[in-house]
Structures are given as structure tokens and as C-alpha cells.
Length: 60
Image 1: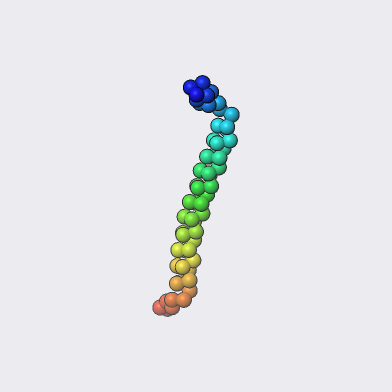
Image 2: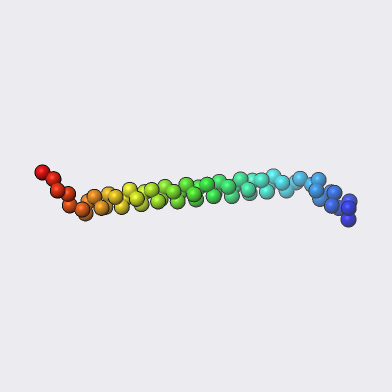
């Protein structure tokens, strides 16, 4: 059992796939966060535009 555990800990064949999976997950998380932030800001901009169009202004 001790020999198996030592061999298991030294085996690095699957490490690369795991690292690529973690990197892909991190990139996906950053993309979702960025799109959410941009979406919220765009919603604010379009709401401000809609309010400016529908709200009458008093001018000369």
C-alpha cells in the first residue's frame, strides 16, 4: 500500500489536463463577470436615454 501511494503521488500524467481545465474555468468565470458588468452599465445607459426621450424638457 505504501508503494502504491508513493507511485500515485509521483504520477503527473493527468496534471496537464487538470491545469487546462482550471484555466478554462477561470477564463469562463472572468468572461461571465465582465459580460455581467458591461450588461449592467449598458442597461443604465439605455434607461437614461429612454428617460431623456420621454421626459419633456423646458427650454426656449
